[in-house]
Amino acid sequence: MRHELIIGKYTLESLTNGMYASPLDMYREYIQNAVDSFDEAVEAGLEVPERLVISIDIDASTRKVIIQDNGCGIRATAAVGTLLDIGNSHKSRATSRGFRGIGRLAGLSYCDKLTFRTSYEGEDIVTVIEFDTLLLKELLLPGKQESVSVKDVIEKIVNARTEKELPNRRFFEVELEGVWDEAGLIDPEQVKDYLIQHAPLQFSNEFKWGRTITEKMRMNGYSIPQYKINLNGEILYKPYQDMFASDRVKKNLDIIRDVKVETFYRKEKASAVLWYAETSFYGTVIDTSMKGLRIRQGNILVGDKTTCNTLFREERFNGWMIGELHVIDPDIIVNSRRDGFEKNSAYIDLLSNLKDWAFEISRNIRHVSYERSLSLPKKAVAEAEKIDDIDDENDLCYEDLVYAEAYGESSALDKDESSEIAEADYISKLELLLNQKKAQTKYAALNINSRLTIEQRKVLERVFDLITQEYDHDMAESFVNVISKKF
Image 1 (spheres, rainbow, N blue to C red):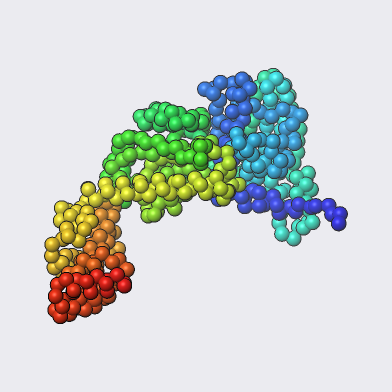
Image 2: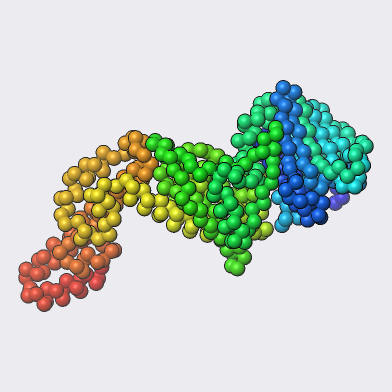
């Protein structure tokens, strides 16, 4: 059967506002294209890293945004095809952050007019491509020209031309005019908060651990790619600080005491390198821009501050952490929305290793919380491993069981987070010890049999008492051992 495939116009809607979780993700898409261009410029010897910069200028009064970089730019002969073809990128998945050929469309849904300008090294012309996004919105209205294809829409809304430019001026520029106020794209503070968490920024010189992190990561085989990004003339840096507040109740001041680095492997191949801060672990980090382990690929955020929650058996522990997991295995492929990864064997293997690591970190957090928050009597109960550590069941049953019954979520809300964890673990340990104590009998053969319930042990204890009363010691012991083995 012969059929001419038509890709309907609504595909554009899916590839623009339907593709991203937030309008602010537009900035991430244009930044990742810029830094890919930076890497090409450095590799080609066109520029040194120190002189590469992305400039973002927001003018809320005119509702205009301009994003410009001094990377490679695009040759005039290739510019139209590169910027208009959809899903036809020539970038390498192994080395480039953007490789699907759809990110350049990210701004279409949030402005009245979108313009690309670019010039390449050695050329004296600039290629200009304009998108009439108001017309696009009209063409995408339900009931209007339903049979129109993506190709037809692009031809209607795009104007491409060339203009004279100074020789050897190399750049790429994105301009959005008539940006929607509702999208948050022209609120400088909102944009800054987004960029300091998502963009591949440098550590601030005021963050004393920045150099340590960079050097330790390099020694573990990964050099973090860091780039200069200006927002309205201000150089942006990652949000990490040496001192911060934690614990939702007490808001204790804490400091980073050390930085640890872990490398995760798939067979002999490195999958990811993680740096994380050793702190006092008072509780949840208050500053949401620092809070939680962040996953990054090419130093661009994947997901958000909560993405690593599921690694921990208690999800809240991720909020106690500060750090970044840099994924370096090219077989671990970020999905189109950049909120996670494709579920292949390389990703699943990394996930398993991360969960093992998170389990050990969780144990460390709990231990620190015990030491800081438990009173001596409760600490003795929490650390007891044998029932023999508690001499008398009555020492626990009355006072402590009353406490256990009274302890609940409402009381926990008034405690600092370390105390809350310590109390919860104390109650759990206490219940375990009490159950163990209740299960004890005077016969060792019953006590060591983990298959028996408390009721079964008590019944057999009565049976064994009768046997020892009717028979001499050796014969009674023989009967007891035979019966015990049957269970």
